[in-house]
Image (tube, rainbow, N blue to C red; front, side, top):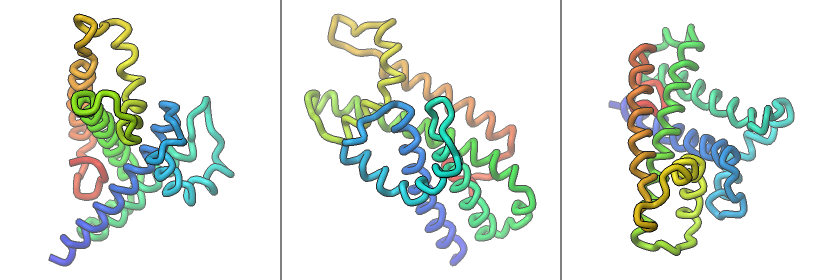
Length: 197
């Protein structure tokens, strides 16, 4: 019972932090507005760990490699702690398998972030189409790199109905199926891997 409670607490807190770190990485990739209050909160939470990493890990081709390393480290540390909590200490002898499982978990989280940003954008376009709410603006900025190329090829039907969300959601479903197949290939253990449910 105590180990289940401890597992829940560690898994939840580490997952929340990992989502924030992944969002920090995505904000830079999609060139989101860093003056957005949500973006500023994400930067504030991640900066204490990213700042020292950036001193030793340079960016590559515009990609913040310090964020990538931090994602890997958070996954690895969380997996090691969770392995101890659930009594699978034999996994600690092979950190490479934990890193591989963490990669799958990270892909799952990224797919989930795009999915929920898409849902927020769809709901926002119906409820408050001209809203400048920071969360809605950020969600739109995150999905725009996926939606913009589709909108170029398939403009809105009748000039009003945008079908790009349907295509993006279908694409994300296909990606989830591929991730699941990859996870099965690696024999991922969901109890010690953040983001893989």
